Image 1 (cartoon, rainbow, N blue to C red):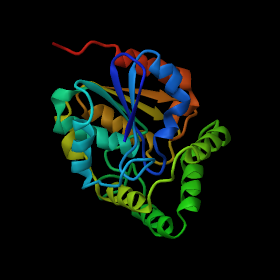
Image 2 (spheres, rainbow, N blue to C red):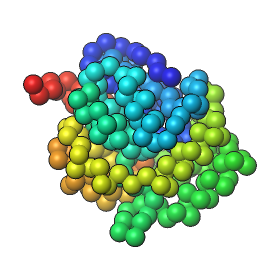
Image 3 (cartoon, rainbow, N blue to C red):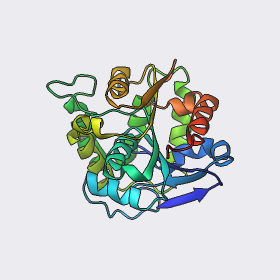
Length: 254
């Protein structure tokens, strides 16, 4: 389900795991002043029906429902979906903004800038038994290392109360994606210009993961937010809005 606010270049905001489109609400007045903002709830979040297929099918459905061209701004898991959509439909994507993103959330034999599989397994086990407590634990975890951790945790917890909670099936499916998806082989195929926004102290996707994206995606630029954790867009809102505004108003190449 998508809500559209504002006028200007089309900008789609794609949330991450566990927290729906309400996470973007504090930025909406500023962003919608100069862009047509599409607030996306992924399947099973907010009022969106839980009709998702696999990861690739979800990315395809996402891009098919948006105008052409569009800037995709994805946070964490939302960033992974944005990358997949940009490879599936490069002609439709005017740019990628990847916030706190990674090519692979889970560690692999040749990839250590990530979470141990046991972390994902722990969340998978607890989310089916205690979903509310698990989401609260997740908010605390993602705020670690941020110099505004308490304020950001309060704001994210409040966002959970502004919309219906995500369905347990959607949470479980998202964790499966975080465990299984490795986008590294697809990165050379990303042709869209790309802005990477990453917290210096991100406790979930280390800064090394963002540096890898910056080195591997052909037309990528990395902006590091000092003192920020996994939600840099809430740590320094003015800077984030300014970066996004500038990025959206660059004319696409003919």
